[in-house]
Image (cartoon, rainbow, N blue to C red; front, side, top):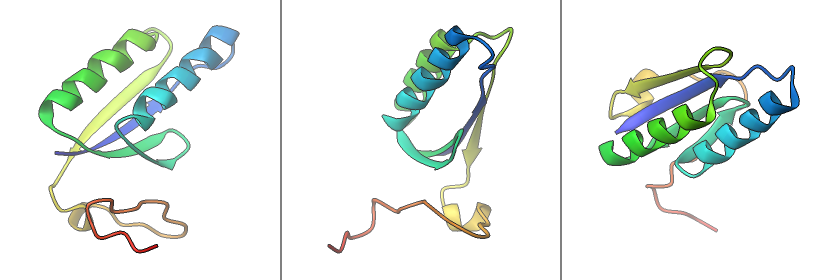
Length: 96
């Protein structure tokens, strides 16, 4: 399953800055950062649930916002990118 995770964390306090780092670190374990607070992930349903539980355990629901979008299986059909694109297809052959 392909998902897009976007978050907005209130960083006016040290606790908020810590939550921001923790959420980014958690997302890095499941996908790749394509913008500062946006990750694209290709994961199994159980991994998505694990990620959701982990993120909800970090964020402050009174101050922060988390959005998880389920994408069509073919990324090219739903994502239009203009300018710099940091996405890498890790399922394709890797040429070094």
